[in-house]
Length: 354
Image (cartoon, rainbow, N blue to C red; front, top):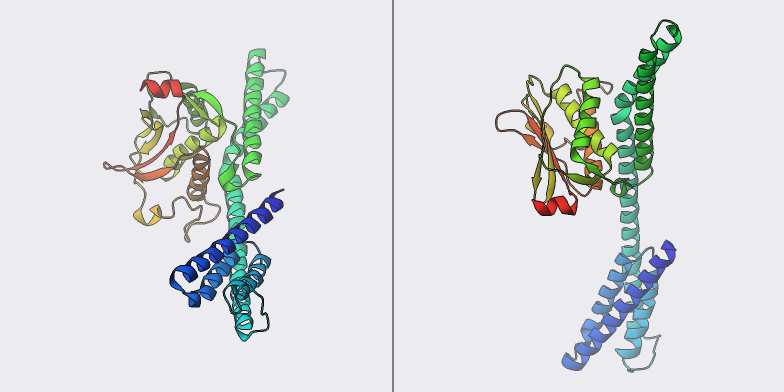
């Protein structure tokens, strides 16, 4: 179906371009007797057709059609064919050369762009899997530890403790299942066409769930949370947005040397709910700012280092936020430290009240 639409659009574009060239030449001949411009206008039309359409054939077909048009309407004897004239032969040769060269160049350019897009998709998919690998290990370790405790000490563990361990196993298993489903949905599609599972999520519930998971990872770190007192509902893919916020908070824990305070703020503005993750650590070096979201590692940084999570994780975060119709921004605070922010649209009722 897509191929048929492409053929139809290419054919329609070629026909319209040739008709415009034909009528433009008629106008110039009638008004200004500018017959010397005729071949150049048709050559321009052939160039545009060869550049715009797929492959070589539309350009070559347009070349022959242009030669016939020039010979029939704009060469003596007018309104009659004289295909053996030297002028007809020279125009045909020029137009065929133009269409073939243009078609070759544009075909190569399109192939290079397609290869580049495929490479970018594969890079982003690999980065996504590496970025969340450590997040998958934590619940797996918890499940393994709880199961081992139950098996080895089943007769000595009180029933209440057994139920608590089983509830933890269930919760971690559900989280893993949702995460794997989201990973599969992201890696199946193009970077710019992530299929989101959007739901209306209450902001306070999202933050509570995030804090519970963060405290499991970093029980000694306090987060200063500032969110609106009013009820705020935001359409989003909660698992992916939670993963973004978790990555941003973890980046602060891993990279913000000298950090004393960590903030998670949400403010309501005209454009929606703006999320901020801030710290008062060392900030982001200026030389790293330009490639912060590229997913590449510094040359002097080992590939298996925990620090590699920063570049990879942020590239994935940017992709997720872009799929939500926003942009992930990074900068340094005036008082020291880094700040990351993005904006999500809120439900119409809540937004309209602000």
